Image 1 (cartoon, rainbow over the protein chains, first blue to last red):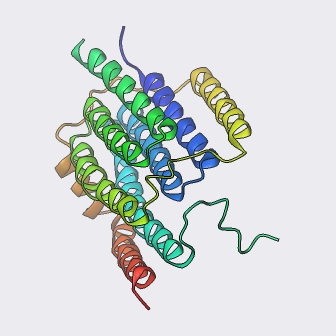
Image 2: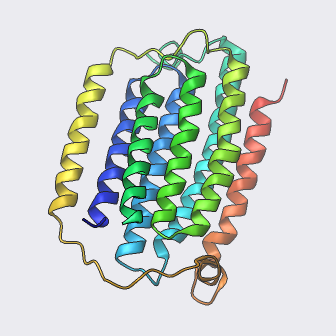
Length: 103
Length: 162
């Protein structure tokens, strides 16, 4: 059997669902950030698979994957800085306890 | 044939590493399995003949983002407390499974216009032409450094001692 576009898309969907579950169900803010990175990686796989199988000579999907990687790096830096600032002020990164703006 | 075996091995490694990210109790071990998942995704990029992206994946994700996450875990001392779930665990599981089912159904039942042309290799010079060349992505490429600069400045301002 050969590996087609669908195999990569299903792999990408499975990784995205795992990341979605982690982002929704976890309390630790760092684990939530890690789950978001998993979801971005899954999207990258889908982008590169579309680029490989549908427009093999244009490489547009790979260009978009590069931009996603850059944005993910910026997001990780700012997100972890916010987590550090919250930890310094409140001594916890449990997202169920960070409820200052909840009424 | 080698490509098929490589794909299945890398897919199994990536999915089990991703599962252990969300299921392991120890936060530090979760971060280590996240690194394993990033490496497996880099291998997936190689099987898709995206050599430059595989190198970028190893450099940025495995090199930079993983170090950043591990540093944050060290600095917040949350390792002892583990990674418990909140009370939305079962609804979140249902949402994730529903998402998986719906999107897989849509992806399997769509007729993708797949063309049989072999992919371009190596991709580095072609990507450079795409990014910097005529009619390429030069404007987004110029916006990206501004985004990175803003992110760096924001991170420094946020973590600086008052």
